[in-house]
Amino acid sequence: MEHLAAITERRPYNAVRDFVDANVDAGRSGKPAFKEGSRSLTYGELQKESCRFASGLAALGFGQESRMAMLALDTLAFPVVFWGAIRGGVVPIPLNTLLTTEQYVYMLEDSRAAVLFVSEALAKVVGPALARVSSLKAVVIAGNKDAISTGNIPLYSLDEILAKGNADVFAAPTLSDEVAFWLYSSGSTGEPKGTKHVHSSLLYTAKTYAAQILGVREDDVVYSAAKLFFAYGLGNAMTFPMSVGASTVLLSGRPTPDSVFEILEQEQPSIFFGVPTLYAALLADKRTTKGAGSRRLRLCVSAGEALPPHVGENWKKQVGVDILDGIGSTEMLHIFLSNRPGEIRYGTSGKPVPGYDAKILDENGKECGVDEIGELIVRGASSAEGYWNQREKSRRTFAGEWTYTGDKYLCDADGFLRCCGRTDDMFKVSGIWVSPFEVESALVSHEAVLEAAVIGHEDSDGLLKPKAYVVLKKDFTSNDELFESLKAHVKEKAGAWKYPRWIDVRSDLPKTATGKIQRFKLREEDAATAR
Ligand code: 3UK
Image 1 (cartoon, helix red, strand yellow):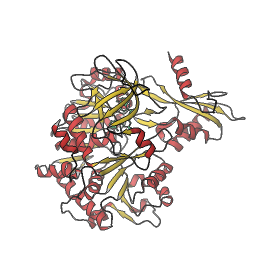
Image 2 (tube, helix red, strand yellow):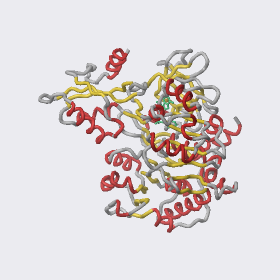
Image 3 (cartoon, protein in one colour):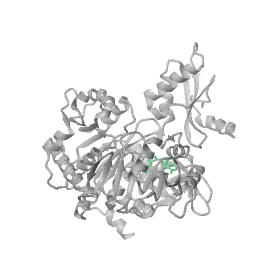
Image 4 (cartoon, protein in one colour):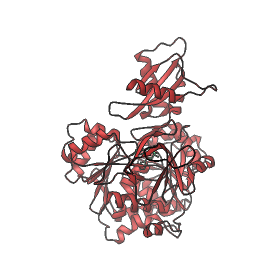
């Protein structure tokens, strides 16, 4: 694949040229790149505003190789700030907007970001973190400055930064191999890892998965329920449509069946990206009929966790459009195994995307035979440069050209790859990581809990949700009130989607001789009783 080698070849290259400036050069100045509610942002406006943002930041002393954390909703400001940073060589670090103050303290400290960009609505949760981080030199807020108090750290509104800058088109002299942005990836101990991606990787995913599996084109209108701060959403709703001059619909609020149907009907997207839980929720809604409200709908995509076969099959029956299930990761930036239009096998992740190779290895590092389960490893040039300040983990995950996924897979006789769980105890809820350790830590910080173990338990749709086994302290008895209090406690400490949907009170938990909780025993017991 000659053209792919050209993308990753080491040379002077700034991704903003391909994704923003090339669209203006191609005559799409007046075409909306993004729509949000009744407002839109054209390619021409995006070029100007991103230049203003980049030069505005530079005027404050933040240029090439500075880092900027972004705690931002999916609004029109997101692409301006993200591409503005990339243009200026500043490394944007979009953060998950669903986390707690504690977790923001960790990521701001860990990343040593000099600048924080924050949406007004998120000022409340990150505000209290600011006094506890030492690296921040400026905070930029989209909205009202009164919404946040930053102490000694200079505070600017986004409008002030844009006004400081000018619209002359430029791009910092970065290299194709240079780190362009980071994304945080969750780990089993609960501490997320800054995953560093280079400038060329964005185009690599666009020319492989987006061009060759989705066949994304200029007249597409894209809507992704997955937000821009996820690698999945960043590709879906930003780099893929922008790689061909298409348009994207943004939703700043939560993607519920109501808000999603509203977008499908009003904006008539041609490609829809979701996660399995959302498809299951939409299927349970009577508005899910042909096209699900959009006459233009031609493709649906699912990723984040395995799509249960019945969800894909029922969607095809009711909506008339297939769901392409594909597996991607923050480490690989986007989807590397996928089903493809006209060749779908529900219950599998499909086959390697052009530009990627996959292998399944047994415990001895030997390649597995047909139908044998082992760890999935993948090769492809969009793989991250490594984790920030995590040498041990980087060496284990990024082994030369091959990236270890931590996923158990098998390959069937027809070459379709099937997900068979994880090599660790992690699992996904609504496509977002849950670390049992993190939920257990939250549970044992509750006054009533002595010990806790957490596993993923399949709900009626075949999708995993947290189930907790707890040993209570003396003087505490199990009742609904206590269960509600435990759930609320986890939501607050760990994150809203992580609370246990089921709680099982035990007198003890299975442990190794050294006292480590054996979650696999609980998983086995749970699977046996479900059968
Ligand atoms: C799991 C899947 C089975 C798998 C992602 C699309 O999910 C994304 O990135 P994350 O870093 O998680 C990666 C892990 O999630 N997974 C994702 N998709 C599937 N398991 N079937 C699937 N279809 O454990 C993987 O290792 O949050 C998804 C594009 C970009 C992404 N970053």
